[in-house]
Amino acid sequence: MKRLSRLLLVPFIIACCSTAVANGDDAGDYATLVEMNEEILELGKPRVKDGVPDLGAQAIAHQGNALDGFRERLLRIDTSTWTVPQQVDYLLVWSKMNDLVFQHRVMQPWSRDPLSYLYQFRRIPYAEVPSVNADKEQLAAELRAVPAMVENAIENLAQPAGELAKLAIFLLDNFDGVGQGEPYRDTPPEGTIAWFADLCSRLKTAGSDLAVECAAATAAAQRYHDWLAENLDGMQASAAIGAENYNWYLRHVRLLPHTVDDLKSIGVREFHRYRFNYLLDRYKNRTLPELELTQSKEQHQQRTHDAESRTRALVEELDLFTIPDYMPDEFETDVFWSPRAKTDRHFWEELQFRNALNNHIHASIPGHRFDAEIRKRLDNPIRRTHSESARAEGWAT
Image (cartoon, rainbow, N blue to C red):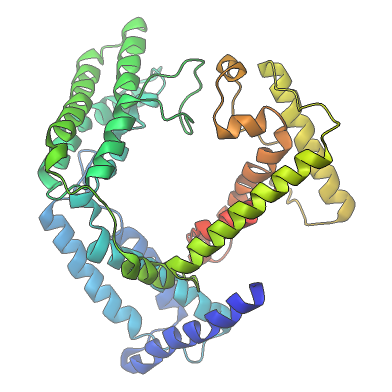
C-alpha cells in the first residue's frame, strides 16, 4: 500500500510542477517561494480590528482578489531545474494556496459556519483572573470584543448550515464530554456560556473591576445561542459539500492519492480490523484480570511517569530513533485525573485510566508533542509552517 501510494503521487507531482514550468515566462527562484509561503500564511488570516476578525463581505472580496493574484504568480514559477525537495516545497505552498481557494469556492465558513464565530471567543473565559495590569488589560480587551464578534456573526451568516448551528448551540450549552483545551475542573462548566459565568464569578470573588465587561460578554454569548436557535428552522439542514468537491480537496489541499470512496473503504477495513484484534486480544488474555481503573490523581501521575520511562527505555534499547536534547525530560499527561472518572469516563479516559501507555505514546512521546517540538525547530521555513494532520495522526498512531 505504501509503495502504491508513492507511485500514485508521482504523476500528480509531475503534473503540478509541469504546470509551473508551462507558465514560466516570469519565473521566480526558490527564495521567491519562501517569501510566498509567508505571504499565503498571512493572506489566510483575517484582518483584525479592536480584537475582532473581519469576515465581512468587503474583507472577503479583498482576500479573494489577493488570492487570485497570488495564484497567478505562483503558477509562473519555473521549478524545472529545482531539486526534488524544493519541488516538494513548491507543492506545500501550492496546497496552502489551494486550501484558501477551497474556502472561497466551497466552504465559505464566514457565511455558512456558525462554529467559525463561536471559536473566536470560546476560549476567552478559560483565562485565569489576571494578577498584573498587562494581563488585566488583555482580558478586558478580549471581553469587550465578544459582543462585536457576535454582531458580526449575525450579520455575516447569510446561509448557515443547520447541522453546524446545532453543534454551535450544543457547545454553547453543554460540556463536550472531553474538555480538551479547557482548564481542569472536577465538575466542568456546561458549555461556553457557563464558562463565561464561571469567569465572572471568579472575577467577582477576586474583587476585579472587569464585572461589566464580563457580563456583557456573557450576554453576547447567550444572544448568539438564542439567535441560532430562533433561526434554526429556516436554515439549510445539511453542511455537505458533495463527493466531487471533497475529492478535489483531498487531491489539491491534502495531497492524498485517495478519493472519498477510498477513505470509506479504508475506514471500514480498519474498523473491522480493530474489532477483530480487540476480540482476539480479549480471548488471548481471558484468564487475566481486567485492567484496574486509576483511583487517584497521584496514581495517575505515577502510571503516566512509568509509561514514559518504559517508552524511553525501549527507544534507547532498540535504538529506534534519537531523542533530541531539547526535548522535555518528561511530558505531562494530556488526560487529567478527575474523580468523575470513577463512574463516568469518555473514550480517552477509558484508555488512559486503565493503561497510561496507550494514549501517552500517541499524544506525547513519540507522538504529537514530540513531533511538534521537532517541527518547531526545522530549518526549512516552508516545512516548519506546514501542518498535515494525515501525516501527524499516522505518525502518532
